[in-house]
Picture 1 (spheres, rainbow, N blue to C red):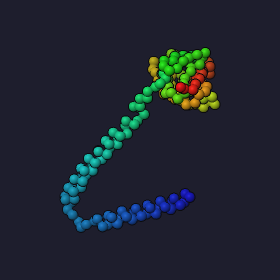
Picture 2: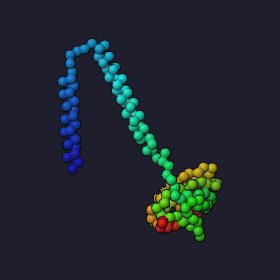
Picture 3: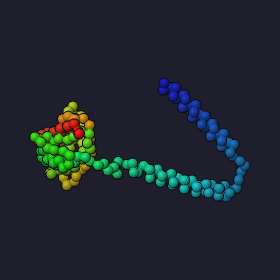
Picture 4: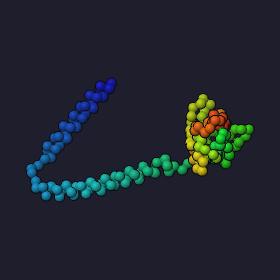
Length: 182
Ligand SMILES: [Cu+2]
């Protein structure tokens, strides 16, 4: 199959080169004075410059607002997370509760985790019950990282620390129970 594509590409390429060569051949005219040619080229160059600027500005104007950095997602659920040696301080702010050692979040809602740390750097990693990492962000002292995540399926999720932070690092876990949203 690949050789067929290769052959087709080769024929297209050869045809394109031939067409360009023919175009140049028939467009060529007699010799002209350098000054005249220069003037002609310069005027074309000016148009080319403005067209290029217009295309660049248009492309930038169209694509920059689509960059993820400007994305302001409105969160239905807000939870404050603070990493400590060696536990997670969890404080539901909006749309979630914390009961019997579990953070309870409704499924299908946009959750904003506001993640920071009280002592050293930690890593806030969310895993599903199969141990697959779903999302993560750094937990840093004196800085709040925002992590937006939507739990699509109800179930038990786990939080583990992803940054080695001392001898009880492995004990740094938390439980998230995602319940059927209304
Ligand atoms: Cu840690």
